[in-house]
Each structure stands twice: as C-alpha cells, then as structure tokens.
Length: 177
Image (cartoon, rainbow, N blue to C red; front, side, top):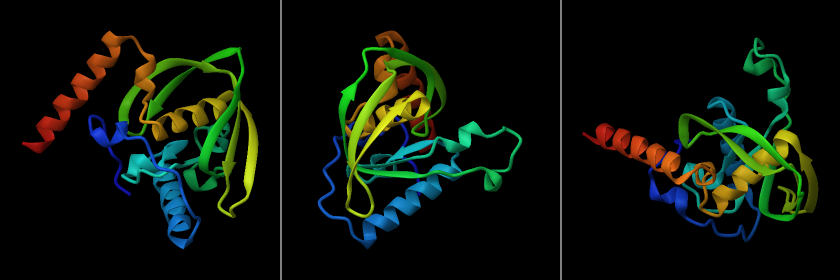
C-alpha cells in the first residue's frame, strides 16, 4: 500500500473508531502488515496508508534478530490492534531513537513512558489487554499517537520540528514539479 508522507495533512487527522470487524478490515490488516514488513518497519497505523480508522499493526520481534538475516528468515510476531486505549503509563521514562515510515530517513530521540497497559480489540473481536515495556511500549505509543493525529516529531523542540516539516514540505513541492 502507498504510504502517506509528511507534510500530507491526513497525518494530522484523528482516526475514527472501528465499528465492526469484517473481511474488509481483516484484508486491510493483512495489507498493512505486508506494507510494514516490506518498508521495513516495526509499526504502522491505518492513517499512514490513507485509512482514518483506529487500527494499527506492530511487530518488534524481527528487531531482536541479527542484522544479517534475510527478512524471510526472521521471526514474526505480528500484533493487530483495533481501537486501542492506553489505560496506564509508568512514571518511569525511557528514550528511544524513533523513526517513522511517514517521515522517511529521519530519526530522533524521544522520551516516553517506559511501560504502558493498552486495552484493544483483536481481529477476532475479543477485548485484550497488553502490558508493554521496552521497544513494544514505545512502538505502541508511537502508533497510537498517529491515530490521534500526532507525530513523533511533536516531541522535539519547536525549532527541530519546524526544520523537519520545512524539509519535507520542500521535498514534496519538488516532487510535484
């Protein structure tokens, strides 16, 4: 699926709740996972492929593997998260260098809660809760931010954020010429 890239205003749209889980939604989840793996990434929100619905996919398992392995040889542990809500966040903080498929080739350190508890619905329509820490916690928070129209660059200083937006706006204009 084609990715929505900064400065597309769709990235700032708040996503609508998923009302029902049907074959179309399951196909979307599969397409999103395929897009995420191909990119390659570890998380993708539906809004990033132009669908303003509260769904995201993550898979941090492949990041635990060795760099030299082929993508097809890496372990996969995909998680499809529908209508997520962060129930609790730890006071303890952690810092990860984050990137985003919608802001290609830009990375920055972001501080977030070290652990979160998230309630969500799975593809079978069952309500689930997950206690996440480490990279999974960061990834879930990053993707849930997308559903709320927020980007990881919003955690940077205004100066850094404005520079990134300006760079991507300029690149977007040049591509349209």
